[in-house]
Image 1: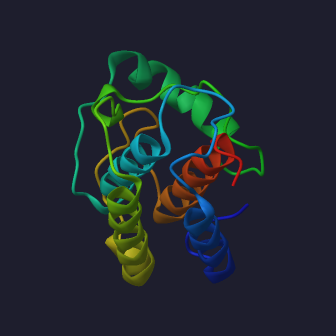
Image 2 (image 1 turned 90 degrees about the vertical axis):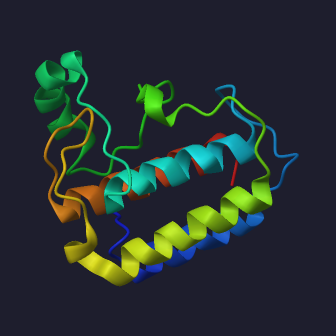
Length: 150
């Protein structure tokens, strides 16, 4: 299982982020590269506790069932995976600006380590350990970088 607590995994994510260009064609979904990076930055804000969204009712029921299928394994995040409405990005975003913001959040997460992870529950999965946050954030970043072929 890859995670943002692994130096090599972080290095590879940053290399892939650097290869992402505004004209990269998406393989699925509707977001532009700039919107996807803003979306990813929003999810990193969850992990460090800057955003605290409400728990979704369905998530309170389904989250516990789905969590073992999504975390604790090397499976890729599936296309069309549900997302919190709080993380939807529909306005125009500049890729460079959003990539820099995301990079700062990744660095903050990595430097703080497990103690820097939020203690607030994830909006879908509920309570996560720092290791689960690190794995989920890696999988989420990988998912959106694969979306654009990088």
